[in-house]
Image (cartoon, rainbow, N blue to C red; front, top):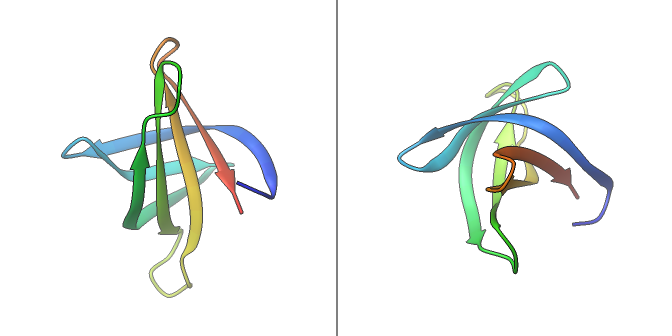
Length: 77
């Protein structure tokens, strides 16, 4: 994705999909999962639409999970 480089993020799953995440101290709710892919290597990435408040428009983010370290990172376009 273009934009900011990936940053660490804390992710909560529901039914094995990202449902919420905290980024820069702010809680975001995933409104829609757009794509799920497993890139080469040990991990998986989710392209989602999320918003910190339901009244605000959602933005597209990419959440990637490194299975080796069990860490999540976020990129935004």
